[in-house]
Amino acid sequence: IAGTAGRWHGILARVTTHSTNEITLHRVTEEDWESHRDLRLEMLRDTPDAFWSTLEDNEGYGEAEWRAATRGGHFLQARRGGEVLGGLGLLTEGSVDFPLPQDAAALVAVYVAPRARGLGVGDRLVEAAKDLARELGRRRIVLEVGSFNEHAIALYQRHGFRFTGATVPHP
Picture 1 (cartoon, helix red, strand yellow):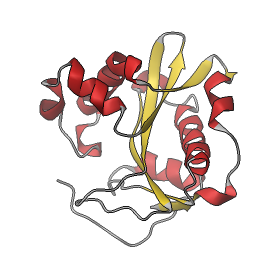
Picture 2 (cartoon, helix red, strand yellow; picture 1 turned 30 degrees about the vertical axis):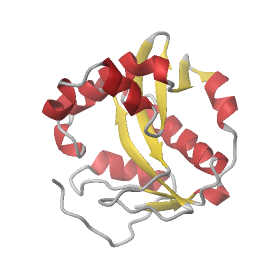
Picture 3 (cartoon, helix red, strand yellow; picture 1 turned 60 degrees about the horizontal axis):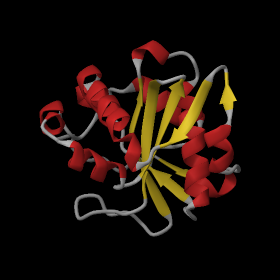
């Protein structure tokens, strides 16, 4: 699925201070390693088939690995008070397994906790990711989603993403 970041507007700085219905979007820093870890482990427990890594892969990481993980991309969390309700990542660097064009960012690890589903958290996170991609000079956002994940597909399509026709086997 891909979208065009160039047609969206906004600045992430506004998002980090903006609160609607008590839900705030927060840009993750290294100091947020514990909430980043907790959310990652929660998502892998809740919907293990939706992600490329496993709970077993992540449970053994220590503080140093989690701090490093926060530096591996641009991560956002939706919060209500001190409670993390969901999050996502935006990567601007590709890899051997996942090459990324220079003008694109990859949307990864999109997750909304069951307690926050139906509150618009996913929509807010995706809008913020589009704003962030634009801020980072990326024209496009690409992502991979399992064909079984109908709720995620509907979310992405609501925000202008479309299928590219490319498929890859889920590990």
